[in-house]
Length: 259
Image 1: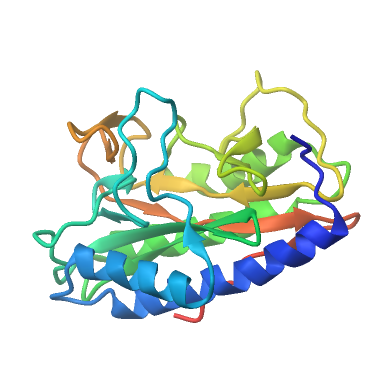
Image 2: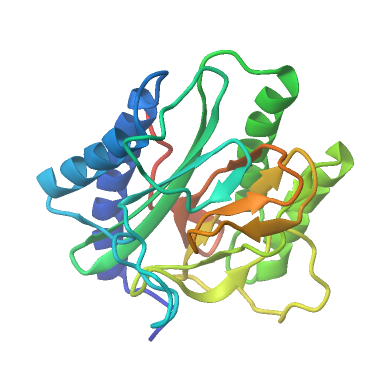
């Protein structure tokens, strides 16, 4: 599996990325008090299907022995970092911090993105957590270009978030994407001295996704085998875009959604 995508593949990925971004934007607008997470998941499925795309998370397995993921959309509420599941019994409430993570196949290639929505009124520290997580993603993107190292991305994210005393999740990372839902290289969101000195090359397609908690960086898995929560119950935020590395920077494959 080549980590370098051709110009034709990147053109296809951009078409799929626009579909994914538009879909996520609609879901973000629908993420309001009283909405069920099942309704949001059905909206994701319908929007992708209408545009000829299909969800890449639905039925996904990390390994053959793992339970297949049961939804098209990961909906992670408050202390849930990622992989929260849809259910008619899980209703969005005022004050929730909701992470929405979605991926899609289009023309044989995969894209991936996420955003966190504040529903109603929340405490100032939660609002800042969401804002700073999005800004951290932008700081990571700013160092991307051919010849930079994968580790430069995590270093830039940590340099921004570290002084704010947030918990930067260490057990979950960004990744390559395109031919598969998850490809190499892994992209930590922190400075990792032991990481391989992988050099970014033009044509690499990456999903960069800081996941940040108001408390500890440590996480644990819920009994459903998928949902990952903060170990101390503190709220978390998550933003993600898919990009293509260029000689002097990057190109957004998944535009920022119009929420």
